[in-house]
Length: 212
Image 1 (cartoon, rainbow, N blue to C red):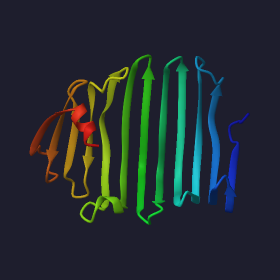
Image 2 (cartoon, rainbow, N blue to C red; image 1 turned 135 degrees about the vertical axis):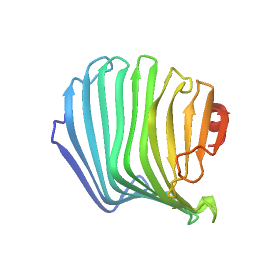
Image 3 (cartoon, helix red, strand yellow; image 1 turned 180 degrees about the vertical axis):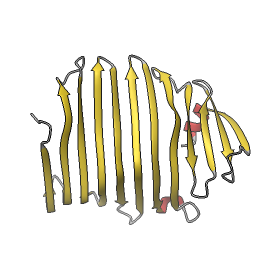
Image 4 (cartoon, one colour; image 1 turned 30 degrees about the horizontal axis):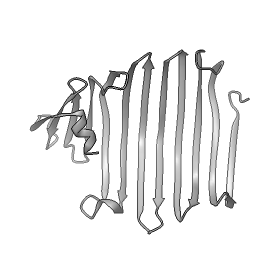
């Protein structure tokens, strides 16, 4: 049983366990704990995680992490809850067995999902930078910011019927995706960052997901 203010820290130095090798440090902190944990009860809590040159080597691959993450959960009752993932900076590096490397850094990030019976709402705000050897020379660098203009909302397993977010490049060019209904979407492109739509693409959720 944990209480507010409790923490757990792990520091590893070539620690071998189940064919995995751990190095570096990771710490966990507990806060905002209230209520009684259960599927129908009201309860909340936050788990804060800090990585310090923490890495796991397994199967010829190495996954390394630096930075912070907070996992929050607030439940008012049965199927009425909000979950969040947030932090100031989280760097993830993956070195594959063939030497290929993927590096990602997410800053000022806040991801949220709320449910109320069958209704849901999603939002995401973050900046993502990094590189990937799998994307080829032209697209090897990743740098963009995601801003939610209005949370995506829907019901059950259907795609969102309302909501909008914008993806912004370093040169301020952007693409704004807006849900028209649970089938159709609109993408407005601002190619030079002047706030004026230069191109509009009408598409569907199905087509978008097939390209990701």
